[in-house]
Image 1 (cartoon, rainbow, N blue to C red):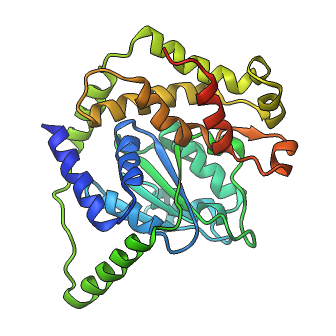
Image 2: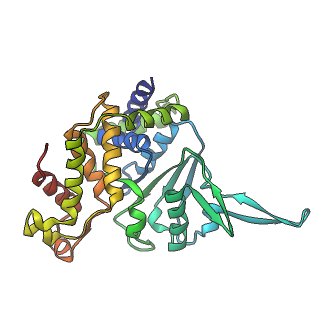
Image 3: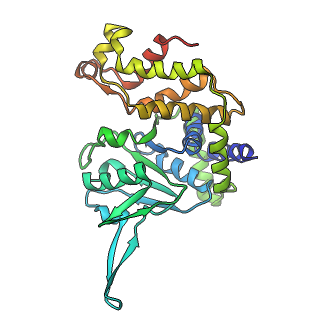
Length: 318
């Protein structure tokens, strides 16, 4: 059963990423929901380790791309190379042509590189010259960014942020978890022994995605999802305070993402139906990067998470 394999992968992730059960669950949700993932947090919180650990548990080609300000689109997509022997141009594929892509510090890439990545994420292809090249069927971009440094960075535009299925925020671990991390890193350095996992075959991933889409979603919960989305677009219907916080609401892509993630979570919890808890659990990660807060909200220190929690408390649960 694919679910057993995903449970084994979750167990592996919990062993190598200590004290982050919510992160490990959402990594799997993104994989099952067939969406790209943005992981954000201060330095040293195992963002790269988390993404690479997920790659270790999935069958397929893995490529890590370190984004820097001098990166060019061709460094990502590849380019046409002239072959003197045949007097023709031949396409040399770039690192984007892999199943799993770790885009490390994605906000350090200039606009042209971000644009090239946007096409790959949105269309599943890249265009070089006049020719478009299809990417693998299993194609997942998992990006990291550091929110503390602004020098030499290029903030991702809203259009590209919207292409990410989920935006996960990491925070510092507790004192007890910090002690476990210290011991784990020491043991790994001494014995060179790390937890291992049998990679999940791509066929099992596609099977899990199909099974998640077939999970029952009641009409009342479909309306609940739409009500949450509409609360971001018509906040004045709930309160003047909420209306003062929001400049723009989320796009229809957020509606689709919220449903897919809720279905994936229900499947991971071995249920054949979606519950309101599934929707509420994934809503912050699905909506966080899609809300555009007003200047008043920013001046008052209101965060996207606070707005989302407010909306979840205001919208009636069926």
